Amino acid sequence: MRLAEEQVKAIREIVYEEAGPDARVRLFGSRVNDELRGGDVDLLVVLDSDVANAAWLAARLEARISRALEGRSVDVVLEAPNLRRSTIHRFAEAEGVPL
Image (cartoon, rainbow, N blue to C red; front, side, top):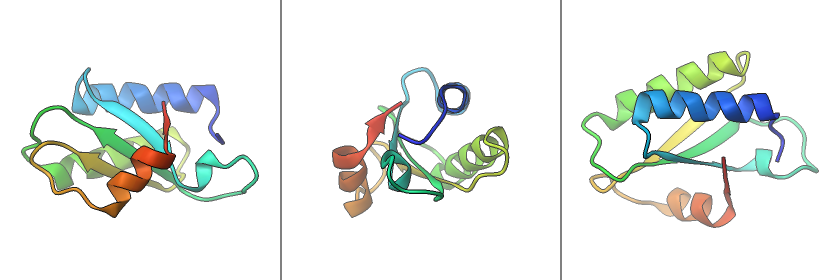
């Protein structure tokens, strides 16, 4: 996994603040592979309750985490009971690493 411990801590804190204490976060994509270089930070944020405005929550998470990671590009995929699941959700769950 190509994230420093301070970065992981910052991600967890921001997800907690924005999505609540029960939210879980997984890193997936190229940053999971230690052999690769570069790449954005792909995160799956799993919520146990419905999300009223998913696009707004994802945008806030992406912006705050990007700032905490000194401008690195961040993509957030949300999973909640009221949101439609897609292939990216299955991939993130299968290949992702819990933070």
